[in-house]
Each structure stands twice: as structure tokens, then as C-alpha cells.
Amino acid sequence: MDDIQNNKTEMLDKKTWAVVGATPNQDKFGYKIYRTLQEHQYQVYGVNPRYKELEGETLYPDLESLPEKPDCISVVVPPQVTLNLLDEIERAEIKYVWFQPGTYDAEVLQKAKELKLNLVYNDCVLVTLGH
Image (cartoon, rainbow, N blue to C red; front, side, top):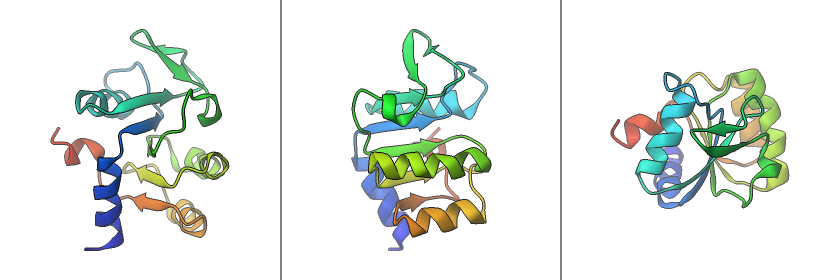
């Protein structure tokens, strides 16, 4: 089994996630991924500095504001935002990161590998969880 498949299996076994790019807009992936993880019994925290809440649930401006450290991050923001997010992930000492399609580029992947993060990319949480 390759590293990405191993990482995916390990991540799906972990129960506390943060969705960076969570949004109250039901048409966006940040909403769909947040809700799908909840439906699958994960503890999920939404991170988005643009919004205060998602249907009555608190959204946090950054990872440092979360009430507990998540095991995994699902990234649903553009590559230029993701690149800066990697510094925040490193400071928070989070090791598992799932880059949704369209959230990374070669520079993001290179930096993530330099930080020795356990990565999943070229894959979608929604598809994996059967949505």
C-alpha cells in the first residue's frame, strides 16, 4: 500500500477534524465536507475567518483558536492560502493533512513534504465517505 493510501486509512480512523474553509454556503465544498464528516460521527471544527458561525455552530478564525487540537485537517481553500496555512499547521503540531482537489500546487506539496506531514491529495473526502 502506498503512503497516501496508508495516510487515508489512518486519517479516517481519527475522530477529531478541522475543516479549513468551512462555510455556511451550502453549495460549497467547505460546507459539504464539514457536514459529511459530522454525519460520519467525527468531531468537526470549522475554520474560516470570514464567518462567525455555520447554522448555529461556531466557526473559528484560525487553528490556534480551536478548543482542542484536531488530529486531521481537511483543507478547502485555494493554494495560496494553503501555503500560509502550512505554517499554522506546523505550529499546532498537527501531522495529518488532507488537501481537497484544487487546494494545492507543487509549492504547497513541496513545503508539506519538507514539514514531514502525512498527506492525502488527489482524493476527496466526500468521495471517500461515499457522497
